[in-house]
Length: 158
Image 1 (cartoon, rainbow, N blue to C red):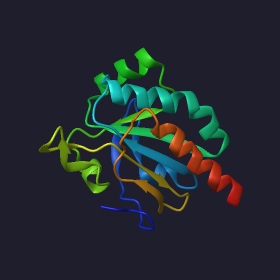
Image 2 (cartoon, one colour):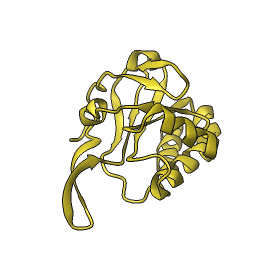
Image 3 (cartoon, rainbow, N blue to C red):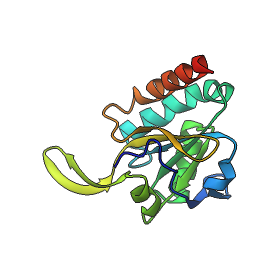
C-alpha cells in the first residue's frame, strides 16, 4: 500500500498524554505519524530516541511528531518516562488504524511470513493529504534523520 497523494485515513486513538486524538486535531499542521512494532525493543527504542533528539528541529520546521503502536497506554507511559519521549504515543490495540495506513499486515521476518506491525511513516499535509510515505523502514535508528532530511528539502522548496 502506497499512500502518497491520497487523503490520510482518519483515526481516533487514545494518547500517552491522556487525550483522545483524531486526524482533525492536526488540521492546519504537518503531522509525522510513525508506526512501530513495540515499546522497549531495541529498534523501536532507537527510533523513538532518534525522533526525540530531533523533535525540536521538527518543531522549528512546523511538524508535529506522533508515534503509533499496538501497545497499551500503560506500556506507552513506561516507555515515555524511561526514554523521556517528548511527543505523544497513540495506542492502537486492535491495529485498525495501523491496517488503514498499511502498517499492519503480512511481512517477512527472518525468512518467515507472519502477520504483524510494519515499521513505516507518513507525513500528512495541513490539509490532510499524505505527502510522503515510507512504507517499510529497513533501519530504525537511521530513519528519524531521513525524515528530517525530507523536511529540510521541503523547507528549501518554500
